[in-house]
Length: 188
Image (cartoon, rainbow, N blue to C red; front, side, top):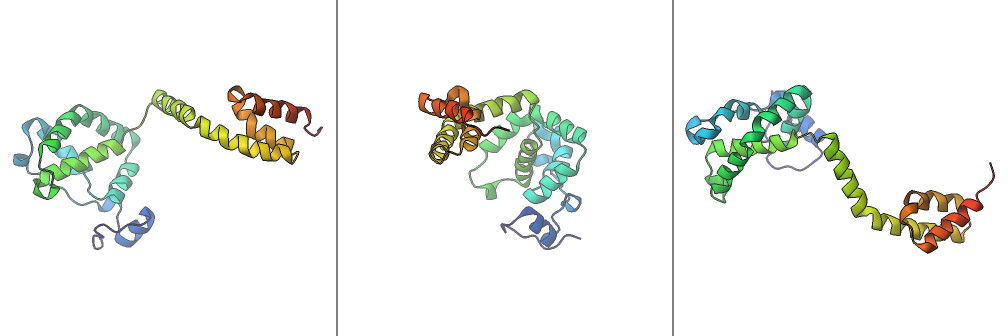
């Protein structure tokens, strides 16, 4: 049995789950009035009644407990409707309290759709490459400062460990320290 709704209490998901019973198995029953939904979105009503869980903790728990194939089917089924969902919600008043109940459910359906998204290996690779490019200058700067300190203390193993990952991108001074440190590594 579900305990009292916590409202907007903030805390670790696992603590809130235990305290309030916010598990996918306890998700609320959602019933959507078709009269409140634009005609082109009405085919989504059964899907929204299953996946449009308003509580973040409960929704994520529910998504994570579903078979991966079902989550993928859910995501693929909703995808062609996303522009229409977003357009409908964007056309509603700015105050969500003025929305029909169905619109609130469709907002949570859109959130569940986003959370069910699984990037392709190519998207993951592109994301990782972008992260590498965007953060590299800061990481090189940090490694350079730490390597300069290690170099002064003649800790050549540390110098190599710090600078080697960035070797193709090092400036002349850091590259010189790396070469020198490699020559002065302790013999095995």
